[in-house]
Length: 383
Image 1 (cartoon, helix red, strand yellow):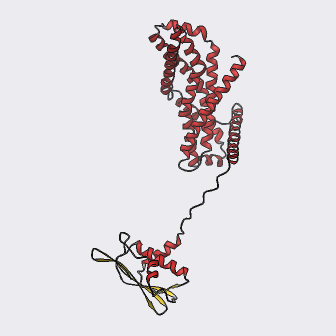
Image 2 (tube, rainbow, N blue to C red):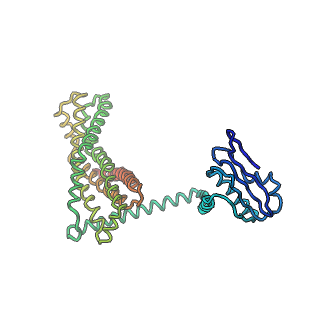
Image 3 (tube, rainbow, N blue to C red):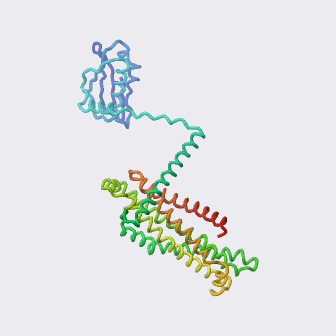
């Protein structure tokens, strides 16, 4: 017998005795997880009734009081004992809810922890990464080809583009993007001018700060910073919009009705950025040079006329055109990255966030890579 006394009251009671060839488990008292309760294996080990030959196990719950899941744990121990020794569970006076709870407990199997897969070798992981990169490259080439085919059909009116969506992209990336482009371009121009003042003033060549600001903004920084801003702003927006449409199955609805998502959704966004990135780059050029001019006038006592005279004597129109060309390339890459990641997104709740993040990362990576390639080609061609 096992009995636990708590504050003068019987907390749990379990007693074993024999009735013929059956082992009877008498239950009584209050069973609670907060109190100590008997364990059936311990009762069997101490009882002489259980050591003799028995064929079945039954229960006597006439004195059973309140109970919770601790009683079910005890009864499952009894069931395990019966299964191990091929015994039957005979008739009992258990509450009618108990058999149903026990059946429910056995209906849900225990979750077995999956073994961790064997860690692949370094060569295998490199191969898997290479195959994944090759698959992404093929997808990007295929997606770019689909856009090119749609563009080729636009002049012949075989492709019907949503011009309303095109003008929405134009508006979003014109007046909507001007504040952040203005702030970043102005700060970049100021930083370049500060750098030039600090370095060139040591050699008595502060006048040439205008050269540094002109070359830096027109050929590199205006297009580069504008591209990074648009990648984080517009590229992520493209991916989120198309990713949301895929989750709500709007993309599948377009395909079902015979409408090409490339023509209907991607082409307006692609052409919208193609039209706006050169203009934003020119605007960033003007704002950045203005910021450099203000710094030069403040720290070097250069007049605006002297600054512009020095800038125009070193910087040519080809430098400005080269920067605008780079900005146009960046716009096309941002549009491709944003739309592609949006259409390739998953169908779960977190797919939109992953698509937007991937679009920004891919867009900025392509911008830096394209900048390096274009500068290398310009050096080879002496542009």
